[in-house]
Length: 101
Image (cartoon, rainbow, N blue to C red; front, side, top):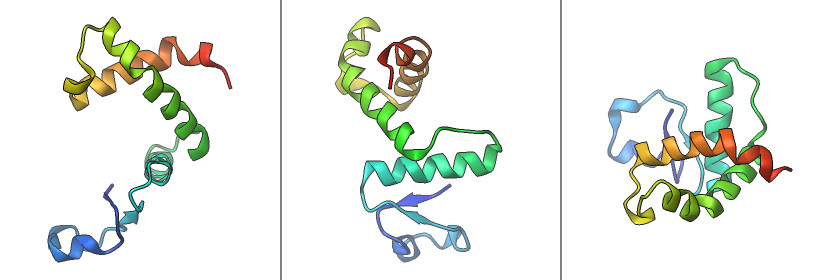
């Protein structure tokens, strides 16, 4: 999956991915999350919550992240992508059900 802020901008610098269906998100988190959700739904064949629900959950996690980092003894400014993914997975298992709709 390839995401970019503008459709076809990649053609200026990346001929290697020509032929891919690039999804533009315009720099908006909501649109980027929906695009990833839709791609995952197609690629996995699994039933997933809709883009709006995934975005809502992301916002909840984003608000909880400073506390989650404190609990994991991590500085939020130093969280790597791998840290972020691990923290999100654990948060989804434990905290999301309590957060409710």
